[in-house]
Length: 376
Ligand SMILES: CC(C)(COP(=O)(O)OP(=O)(O)OC[C@H]1O[C@@H](n2cnc3c(N)ncnc32)[C@H](O)[C@@H]1OP(=O)(O)O)[C@@H](O)C(=O)NCCC(=O)NCCS
Image (cartoon, rainbow, N blue to C red; front, side, top):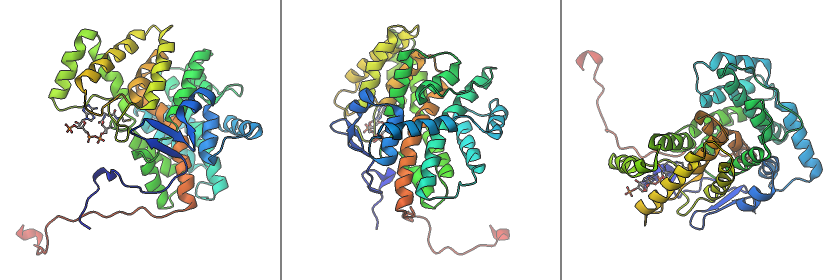
């Protein structure tokens, strides 16, 4: 074989029942349900159940899942102590990566790869990762972590643990929808990374740590923080054109624009933009959202004819900012949602495993004679 599929573009590496994307129509479907319906009608917990079971839960099943998440949300002492040690030196995504490995290290069932145990691990990580990020943010602000509450849903609990204040109904709703929109996205780089690690029959914790490391990069989940920096640097409408021209002139990319699969508008960006308008009504940071809209319009004119449109990261940056969340938490928030999709793919992977082991075409030197070091 002499063909190379760079970036594995257009290659099906597996079959899945979890997600279908039509990049030309701008459609995103989780197990048969359109993302617009899920964003409007469901909750993050329901979507987590859907991804793990490929069907919506009944009332009892949803209550059971919520109860399990409540039980698992608090951190073990060793994990909290670790975060206290790490926060001055380590950024949040790496903290999350390390914390996941430590949560796995103290789980006596971590190497049990049977489906019932894997399902518990998936829900445990979903619960605890949000607590890790909230505790990290509290500690670096000189505050003590806030205990989770059993009367709040997952997204609301995250905001509560982050701020120690009762989130508004709008903030709860927006965070819940943001979690739903980021929960799953077929065979993206971080999901593939989880799958490669899982395919060696390494455990779910290490597979998720691999995925977190992959999500961190600016061409994937790191793009939302990069969007924040771009809009922050632009500051005013008059700076949009010179900033973008300089960026493109240097051969750089505008973050939050373009997608490997979507060649039309990313439906997640459409939903987040709508939410952005609602949040902007009362936010002191609405200038940032307004400037993002102007940047979007400028880019639409500038890139006309190219299939480059705002992706999910473009508007998540302004929505999170208007909720008062620090920019280096945007990518971790992506991970707090995507943990459900990653683990759902791993459930599929472990149930029908095949080691991922592709080839590389060799194009180095041939038939060289070994020279002893003294003669080199
Ligand atoms: C996401 C991304 C990596 C997908 O890119 P891809 O499928 O590999 O597309 P390519 O790199 O082949 O780019 C195709 C063309 O569009 C251009 N392009 C792609 N994204 C661009 C961007 N964000 N800004 C400017 N130009 C861009 C490329 O320069 C290339 O132009 P050319 O054909 O004239 O050389 C890319 O769009 C990107 O870097 N976007 C910014 C990062 C981002 O927002 N990532 C989050 C994705 S959810």
